[in-house]
Every structure is written in C-alpha cells, then in structure tokens.
Amino acid sequence: MSGLLGRPLKVVNAGVELFAGELERQQAEVARVEWRPPADGAGEALERLATRAAETAAANDRAVVAMQAAEPRVVGIGRAGDLLPGLDERTLLHAGPPIDWDGMCGPLRGAIIGAAVHEGIAADPEEAARLAGRGGLRFGPCHERGAVGPMAGVVSASMPVWVVEDGASGNRAFCTLNEGLGKVLRYGAYDAEVLDRLAWMRDVLARVLTAALERLPEPLDLRALIAQALQMGDEGHNRNRAGTSLLLRALLPALLTVEEPTADVVAAAEFISGNDHFFLNLAMAAGKATADAAAGTAGSSIVTAMARNGTEFGVRLAGTGDRWFTGPAGVVDGLYLPGFGPEDANRDIGDSTITETIGIGGMAMAAAPAIVRFVGGSPEDAVAATLAMYDITWAESSSYQLPTLGFRGTPLGIDAREVVHSGVLPTVNTGIAHKDPGVGQVGAGLVEPPMEAFVAATRALADSPTA
Image 1: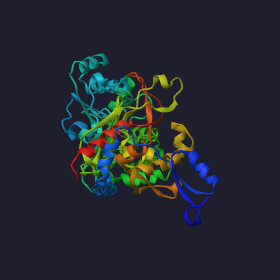
Image 2: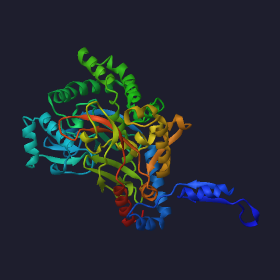
Image 3: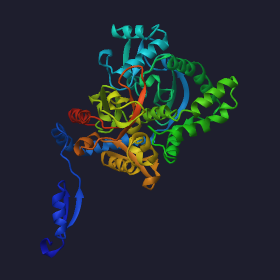
Image 4: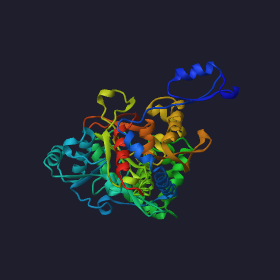
C-alpha cells in the first residue's frame, strides 16, 4: 500500500484493532497507540488546562524537583501527643480523608475502639463505642497533622511515632511503629493480645529503639535504605522484607551496646526480625516527607497524597493545597487467608498509598516479582503494571531504580491530568481488612482508585489561579 509519490504508507492507529490489522495486510507500516476517551466530566477541565500547558509543566517541574531532592531521615521516636498538633487523649487520628463515626467502616471503628481502651478513656470496648457514638471523641485525618497511618491508621496521644525529617526542606512526617500482620489494631482488632502488644511497644520497644537511634553516628538515611531494598526484591508497600532486614542490620551494632535490660533488647530485636512489614511505616513516613516537599506548588497537577478511610478514597494535588477530592473506596481483588473470602472484605483502607505517590509500592512492582505470591498475578503482570505507570507520571525517580528494567527510575509524580485523559489509574497493592470490627487481616491484593477523585481534582485545578 502506498501513499503520495508511491512511498510506503505509515499509519498511527489509535483504538480499534480491526483497522490496524487491515492496514498491515496492505503492507502499511502501523504504529499502534492505545487510546481511550477522557474520563466522564473531565473534558472541559482538560481543555482549559491545555491553554496553560506551559505554566502547568513549569509547576510540575518544580514539584518533582522538590520530591527528587527530598532526603528523608530518621531523627528519633517520640510520643504522638507531644509532636502532632492538637492531639490530646480524646482526639484520635485516622487514615484517609475526613470522616465521622457514623460513616466509619468496621475496621476503622474497631481501631478507634481499641485506641480508646489503650488510652484509658474507656474501660472496655462497649464503653469506647458508646463514647464515640455520642460525640465524646474527636477525629481527624493523619495527613492533616503531618502524619500517615497504615490501614485504619489510628494514632492516639500515647503512641510512639517515628520522626522523619526531610534534610532538604526541613519538613517532618510521623508514623506509628508497625505491629505486624494478622490480628492487629490497624486491621481493626482490639482484643487483649492486641492491647498488650500496643502497651509493650509503647513502654519497651520505643524506649529500646530510641536508645539505639541515639547511638548511631548519623540519622538513618531512608532514601538510601529504600533504594537498596528495591534492588533486593522489595517494592516498598506490601513487600518490605529487604527493608526490614536492612533496618535491623543498621540498628544492630547500637542495639548491642545500649544500656537497657538485655531481655528488652532481645525482645525488640526478635520482634523486628519476626515482622517483615516493620519497615513499612518508615517507608510511609519517608513518603509523606517527600510528597509534602511538593505540596503547595501553585498550578501543579502532581498528586501529593492518596489515602483511604475504608469508605472513601481521597486525593490531594500540589496545586490545590489541602483540599481533598474523593470517590468511593475500591473493592480489593486479592488472595485471602484460609477461611476467608471476598464476602468478608472491607473496602480499600489506609494511608499507605503515600508510597505509590512517591514512585514505590504499586508503581515499583517490577522490582518485586515475588510480590505476586502475596497479591496475585504473575511476575510478568508486575512488570506490566510498572510500565503502564510511566504513561501517567511526570518523571522518573533519580533515587529509586528498577534492575528488571535496566535500572530505569521508578515512575514518579502522578499527573492527575494524564490519569483522567488516558483512563489509566495508579496501580495500588494493599492488605485486606475484615469488614467487621475486631477480626483483623483477611488477605491482600490489588485495587483501583476511583476515577471520580482524579476528575474532581483536575476540575478544581482548572478552576484555580495559575502559578
């Protein structure tokens, strides 16, 4: 098949495969482009944003430069009530966008109940539920106090939190210590075993770790630890075996010399080594400190937070300040623990999608082919998931690299415009909590964020003043 002047015809085919196949049969050179119409409700906003594409590009460059420059470091452990603004004993923080007691899902209610008993403001779960139901407790998103929380994400005043500081911008982020998997507070469990563990973490683990951190010659460089973990098979969200091992290795010389009871030091080391997810909370705090470096960049369409409260999924953009844009939390497609199935699952929940926001987690699944044993699929699916994310991100990470992709940087800087324009949603992997309070984890898998959250964010950006 020839075009003008008898030259071979070169064609770009967008969409219908039938056309491409027919053209190839006629010896045309065909380049296939996957095309989808923009998400419903986004067309007019995209048109307006297109008229200021240069300004948005400059803003996105500034936002991503700030994220690339971030140097998250562990500078200590402290009591949440002493570090987070306005966090008194009757205020409990949670994952995701704002929500009240009446709108909370089962696992979030369970975590609230457990935290109220843990703080001593309720004698038992029944009293805690009554107290919450009659307005005796105050609630707020972790993100609005500089913190992040996995799954239910509940943070109460006496809980110890990691203190992570960005050496470039100076901003700080906080996250609780990881309890492990299964029947734990963050999955909505609150029985005596859960409460005893929380008390031990507060009274023993935090004290031992604080002593160890004080003996280190310099603060722990989380950016370096995450980068190394990605090259050892982690992706930084649902697989943290390498990160936890690297953390314990960094702490061990200090742990061996701290002036703490030997039994407490041994218990702390055994707890960390037996909990492959211990590093997750540090990765989340690193993510928060990194993403917050870009927050407030006027005119930028880069996502600075994705978070779920088990009812709604919320998004924040660098260019729209502290506003939340929400849609229904998704249903996780995953693998279940024995005795559980999809009928037991709560909707998507947790602040841990801050990892995807900075280019790890689901964005870096190509680094962790073993993750598919935990969330389902094949190693090829993990690579394909990461490759698809380059289409909706502004840049590639200069710190986090993927050996399986020739050490290409992970996809960094989710562009809300490209999400709604392409119809491609960020890849998120996650744990699954039981829908009822008090049960705990029942599985893990993959979930799609709601497109309407990105549409709403894009429309708000189009309505906002330019940089």
